[in-house]
Amino acid sequence: MKKIISLVLGIAMLASMSVSAFADTVIIYQDSTDTVSTIESDVKSIGPSKVVPYYLVDIYLSNDKESTFLNGNVFITFDTYINGRNLGYTYVAEGKSMSTWGGDNPYNIDKITMKDTLTATGVTSISAGSGWGINIGGSNATYISEIENHWHVSHQFENIEMNGLILYLSHTVETTFKYGSSNKTINCKDSSPA
Image (tube, rainbow, N blue to C red; front, side, top):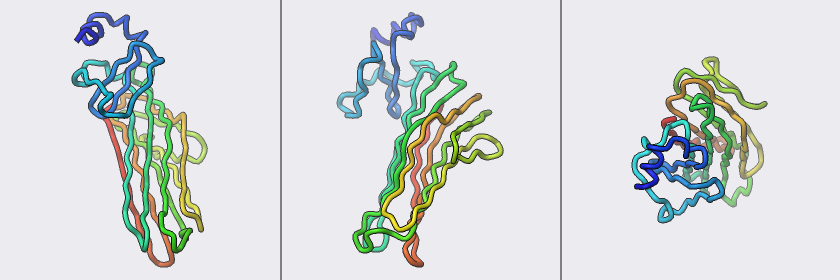
């Protein structure tokens, strides 16, 4: 309770605090040297996330999906960290995604096509590095890669900048696994209000 009162009454204290968010739980650390625990029992809830101004909260998007294909499993996963800056008018994303074929016969699959899409909903624009496609409206950044005769593909990205009045952020991964004339497409998504 003291932390909430201090936060509400003493805006100046915010400069010496770091704030992180996991889903609907907000954790406040007294200094930025503390580490973030992903173990739920270590997370201390201080109330709804409305207590902390939205532009000070980092957003973590993550998801995975597993399915069967042929005689094995296919798996996709991603982790994206989005840092709010410039009083909430700028968000910068970094993260990774991976798609895997887990069968052993064949050991490698004919083709894996993976598409990452980062979306910022609102009045916004996105800029990203080489290889990323930006839609005409400027609210989606997409990266597509294909690999043949292999068992996995991965993306690692950083410095994807989203600017403007951003209301909602999301990351979607869609992957198609192909062997001979058979294919399987799976996807997963996570999103959060900005």
